[in-house]
Length: 255
Ligand code: PGA
Image (tube, rainbow, N blue to C red; front, top):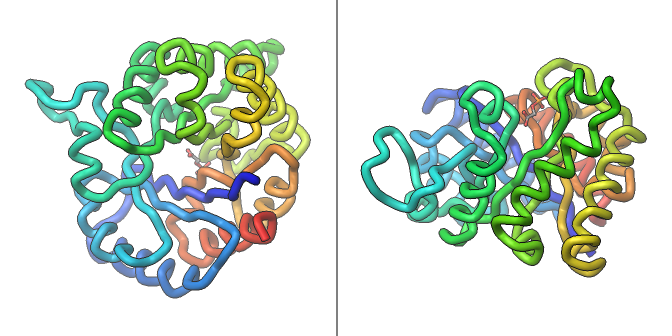
């Protein structure tokens, strides 16, 4: 059975001092919690800090993007092997902010996914539609094409070593969450798409997270949906008690 995963996406937030308080609070608050995997995806400069604070705990750490290249003259970029050097287990790939603000399109997202796996990292592949796309009835087409681009580049079986995050763009940072049934419908669609591409066993094993304004108050209901295997958490991952409560909600599913 799939184990639930809750991953925090800190985005471009934090300082050494605030991170340390948050990491210590997570360590204390999550110690001994079974039935869920937990990770935090932190800004690059703080990877060493996260690694030092979390080494030996069950909490993993990772980054929010990576280069599609392993090494070379790519000023400002950070590669998969560098992330491995800092003990990362996960890396977010194709977050909607990367797509919309930094021009990442499907082929580059797919190349980053492949680069992450080449380095031994678990990519958390984000897919999701904008409000206009949802209102035009294009949700499934958009999500399918984002998923298919990665399947075409990496092969369907590569998804067995990955996590998918469904993040409707209109729900990210807006306080407007998908209803549990809206989330479940898209998660079910994603799993069916994975089954078509790689078989039912593959599809049944891939964790599909929901992201977009997950809070302590709505996490339980979302995670109770059969195809929602945890969450990718932005704003609420910066508040220890909220993030811990969300992890507990996921653990209740995994128990
Ligand atoms: P949010 O962000 O929880 O603040 O909506 C989620 C994300 O962008 O991954």
